View 1 (cartoon, rainbow, N blue to C red):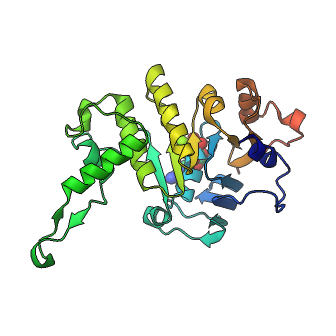
View 2 (cartoon, rainbow, N blue to C red; view 1 turned 180 degrees about the horizontal axis):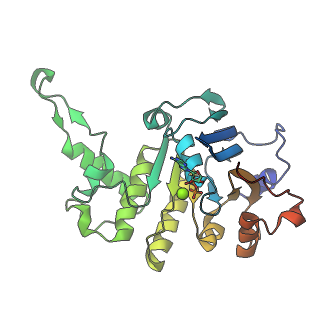
View 3 (spheres, rainbow, N blue to C red; view 1 turned 90 degrees about the horizontal axis):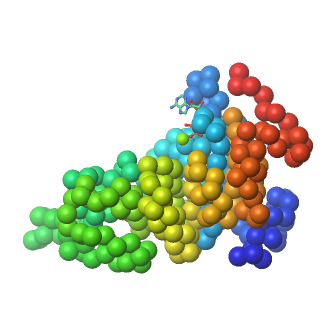
Length: 278
Ligand SMILES: Nc1ncnc2c1ncn2[C@@H]1O[C@H](COP(=O)(O)OP(=O)(O)O)[C@@H](O)[C@H]1O
Ligand SMILES: [Mg+2]
């Protein structure tokens, strides 16, 4: 890891020595009417690494994630997956390329079991008699879910009860494991610990690291700078729709991150204050 970081820390020029990112975005601009949410943003995610995406409210984090996961089309800019240009027409296009998103507790269905949640929207169907009466293959979904939970060392107290009966942290684990189970390349997590207590947050961060260790690229949005310092390999900073800094997570302090987010470090880093939004 350290050798890899030394490479990341080198200038961002595309020298052959740099590892190719699994996901690469260049010149991403997004306008909503007169609001320019993103302005010429560059973003890379690497396999087996956690990239934290930080920035104040309104910096453009969620908009960038939505563009990179097929929810929004960019107004300008290009996206490459494994070096090939892609154009997502919908989240399904991103899913097909192994790109998944876990939202803060919102995307799970409380009335369903863990395995039903894992397969929500992509249920395994077994062909019935003469192929006409397809039915849900609950046994195989349950089995595959159990394997996914086991692989990520998530122990749920009940695999059959509706997940409404689980703690907030366990529900969040289900949402994250679902994204990880389907992701072949990249998992985006938008504030996964925002609603969790201290112990549940620590468990969730461990889970995020285990997912990274399976070789997937993890992109973590978080407001908690200590969480970011604890798990990130690289920190990307957005401010007012611009990518303002990319920092390998080496000896970073909370003050470094807050300074980059708010602009306090600009004088030291020689960065100009971004123009006001028109
Ligand atoms: N659907 C939308 N329509 C209009 N403006 C939007 C929309 N989504 C986001 N914005 C604006 O884009 C900017 C970035 O928002 P967002 O990506 O949600 O920031 P963050 O996630 O960093 O808080 C904000 O000014 C926000 O008001
Ligand atoms: Mg947001």
